[in-house]
Amino acid sequence: FDSKIFFLETQLSKQFLFVTPFIGLRLAVSQANVSWDIKAASYTLAGGASYNFSENFADSMQPSLFGGVGFNFLFFQTTLAASYDMRYNVWGANLSFRAKL
Image (cartoon, rainbow, N blue to C red):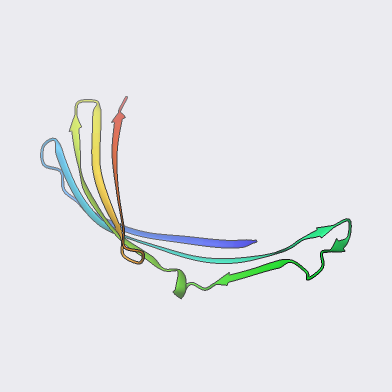
């Protein structure tokens, strides 16, 4: 098993009083090589049950867009965000709440 994953992310944001809207682009690129076979007590099963997988960088690019808005009030921060995976046409969303000390 050998895997390499790289992320490139850029984000644009601007704070207005207690509100911070943001938008960005994320690119995940990975390379994976997986190989295995089944053996029992130094005996390879009939047919040599095995698996090989290899994926190159160009085929593994996963671009996505994201954006949202953050709200800051005293020691509390809430963020509502959404993202869109352009390769697989998948939407996602999240809501977070943080208390700052």
